[in-house]
Image (cartoon, rainbow, N blue to C red; front, side, top):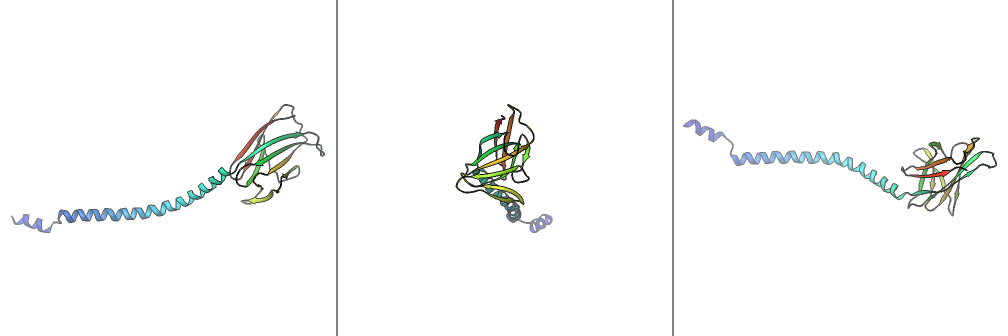
Amino acid sequence: MRRRRLKRCLAVSTVIGNMLMILITLSLAAILVAWAGTSFGAFSGGSQLFFVQRGQALQERFVIEAVFFNKTNPSGTNSIYIFVRNVGQIDVGIAQIYVNGTIFSFNSGAGKSYLCLGASSCSLGTTNGKPNLDLPVQQVVEFSLYWGSTAWTSGAVFTILVASYRGNQAVATARGP
């Protein structure tokens, strides 16, 4: 009989045991919330930057208005004239021009030039150390790409792609002379 009495006196009561379990659970939950808050805080900062950049990319719109081919320019080479208009809400940074998959960088080397048309002029700047053409809203730029001594094939289809630094593209298909 005495043995039972000792067990009862030395044991923790059910109420205090439940309170200890709740206290341990709440302290572990607080530690988990603090850890998750710092981890997701860093993630949300990066995602906020991503959504700001995507929002700018959605405001950026440009179209290829016209494509002309010229066989008789003064230098005796074939050329393409591409007219690009900014119809978006923000300025466009034009990075590259592709003709049938061939890259034509509008600002490097002889035989490639651009002409800004409209009331205000566009400017040649840099983005991430690379040159780009900043095209203001509602302005048009004419790109002149000289093809060298290669003759146009009559009726050939040319795919022209203009790419911006924000990842947007304008594509036009034109039939050669």
